[in-house]
Amino acid sequence: MDTLVISIGMGFAASTPLWVTLNKDNKIVHTGHFKEPRYLSALENADSSIRPAFVKKAKQPYRCNGQNMHKGEWTQEEWEEFFHSDWSIEKYIRYYKRVKEKTGFPMVGDFTNRNGLLSTEFLEQYKPALEAEFKIKVVMIVRDPIRRWWSECNSMAMGKKVEKTFLGPLLDTAFYAEIYRKWRDVFPDIHVIIMEDFSSGHSEELSEFLGHKIKTIHRNCYWPEMDVNIPHYPELRDQWRNKGQAIKLQPLTDEIVEKGKKCFEWIYEDCHAEGIYPKYALNSWYM
Image 1 (tube, helix red, strand yellow):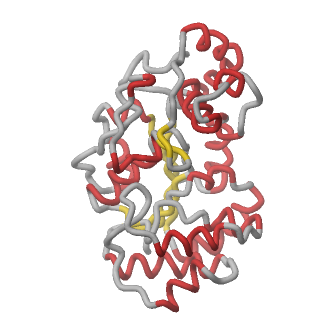
Image 2 (cartoon, one colour; image 1 turned 45 degrees about the vertical axis):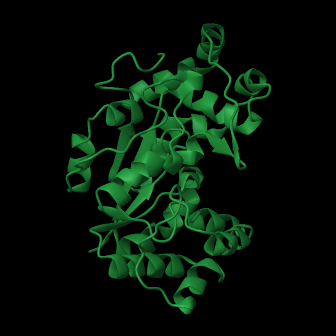
């Protein structure tokens, strides 16, 4: 049976370097035309807003940070069925079957960060259809909760009033353990990747989970941690740009970290209870 790898994020935790590692560098998981089709989110929410976005993307020149250059031969009819038609789980399944057939990669995958926010009801509804056609493997990459949230706040605020955003209401993406439990309870074949461990060279556990050796790990703007001085790698523009502009990063000061610890203490505790914390890059998380 073919294997479908579903990534559930997290955004701002180096999901793109993970995607490049598994897709382009090691040729283990092929994701089709894009890293993030956002199809399941559109299906759950009956959201047609992504359709014109993908039509626009299809006409743009190749961009290495979110698209695949080598995706096999596709007819216009095959393309339009997935990206232009009404959403259905059957079309989703058919698309990834075609990706497997056209690329010959060992596995296919959907690396949409929004997958982590799909509801339990949605996952349970479509679990039988997905498992009838694929062996489902779920991967989740996480980063120090405070640093990840600070990066997301910098992106949202575009470098302005970042601390106010940081100390405001948390988004659901901050609750790693809750997202993990939700997916584990429906699709138990799940593996959590600690960004700091993985980017330090520890790929053995993920290799074993996928059943394929990861020979190289792609570089990552977020590791080692350099605060506002992150490198601007061109293939990882989503790590340092937003809306076509470089993000004017604000420094994460000790004072802000101490304020953040008061909000995040229970999140760290919840992660530790599930075994979600660095095992090799010790002291890389604040708590």
